[in-house]
Structures are given as C-alpha cells and as structure tokens.
Length: 96
Image 1 (cartoon, rainbow, N blue to C red):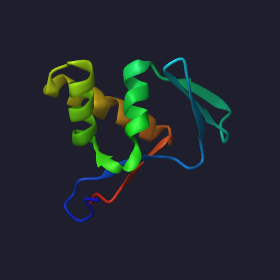
Image 2: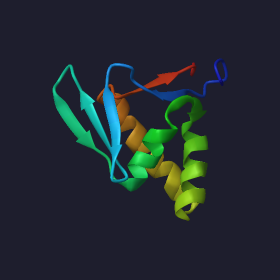
Image 3: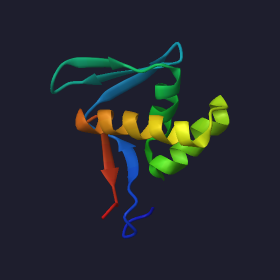
C-alpha cells in the first residue's frame, strides 16, 4: 500500500454487486438501483480495483494489455476512476 505518500490505492466499494458478462462489467448499486455497464477496457480497470493498485499502476497494466501509449492510458484511467468514485462505486484508500 502507499499510505502516507499521497498516492491512493483504489478498491471496489463493498456496497455494490458486480459480475463480468461477455467481457463487460455489470455493476449494480443497491442504494440507487442503478446498473452500470463498462466496456472492455473499463472492465479491465474495474478488475484491477482490488485495493492493491494506484491509478498509475492500473494505467501501466492497461497500456501493456491494450497497446495504448502510457499518457493516454493514464488520462483514461484517471477519468474512469473519477467517474466511478463520484458514483461511490470505487473507493480511494491511503492517499493523503
């Protein structure tokens, strides 16, 4: 973990239900009854959100897996994480 150095790790909220269906993450938020469906790359990032990785580490894995440049991967990961965190589907831990 990276607590104390200002870099948060990201994990899925324990309050949501999720499944991977045909390569896409289907996420249900019981508090709002909303269903969210992520595309292949979003689902890949979702699968990495186990509390052990930072956004930068996720972006590196995305870059390697989908052959996208590191800068684009980081931008895309940060945007997705911000969206999912604002919807309380993901939780950032350990950053200061």
